[in-house]
Image 1 (cartoon, rainbow, N blue to C red):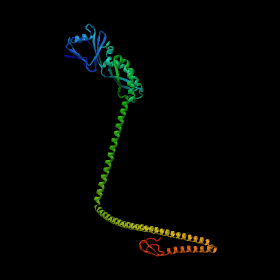
Image 2: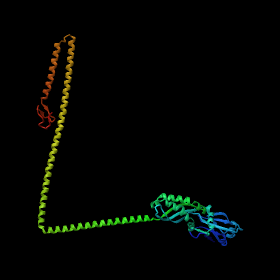
Image 3: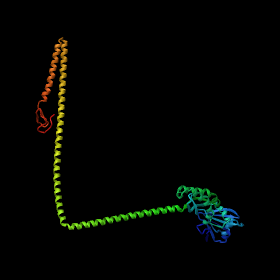
Length: 400
């Protein structure tokens, strides 16, 4: 048992078949693959639309099956086969943009036929051959696509750069959806996608050529500069070689003088090295002396600070002692005055005598401090210091 093939080329979209041509083949069966549909037409009326099924030659053969399905007494029995899957249609066009540049390219329309729209293909087969292929559909919709979609969209582009813009692609698809809706609906097709593919324009070719020329010019310029640099380097090497050969010849002619000069130079370098060593030795000695002097000065300053601190503490203690003694004397005199007043012995002579005693005591305190300042002192290192010495003869510490 064999299958009846209604589609023997991938470009075939639909085929209208008279049942009389296949009902005599009782051993055939019709296989409907996915994305294929078959509409039954009986006496000008549209019957069932079948898809993805197997029309087998049953008990009475395919003729019996057709008779049961489409009517035994029917005079007109036809089968309308169609592809319902998406297909792409490339429509060539020529036009120009707003600045007059010529544009060539293709408009791609992706179309699909829904199952319920298969019978609409009878509008095409009413006045055309019973086979509809891709080229036939392009001839039907091509002129309208150019007039309603391509030309208006190209007119909105000021330059060729606008053809590559995403806005132009969106405008093209929207225009195709609105402008082709009626025609495609009458044929039973639904527009899924539309976009243009344009060839480079003349100005773009000119710009491409200009860019290529500029790139080639830049390359030639780079090669020229590299060649000139090579020549300059070769010239410098040649001059250097000539100079070197001249110097060698001169040196060979004056070989004896050269040897003497080298010997003298070695002697001078040896003397120079000796002087450098002596200078470094003296410099190191000087740095050591400076470091020792700095250390001794720092130690003397530290001792001076200690002496000053002790002197300040001693003066503070003496001052506190004198203040306490003065307070005691004042308190004692106050008590004596109170006792004299109680016994009636307070008189100007008594007051004058007490003031004299107080003045004498203050003079004694002052002379005592001076005598102490002239008395011998002891340094922090244990050496006894005499009045009038400015520094310790043992450690060199300054005396406050």
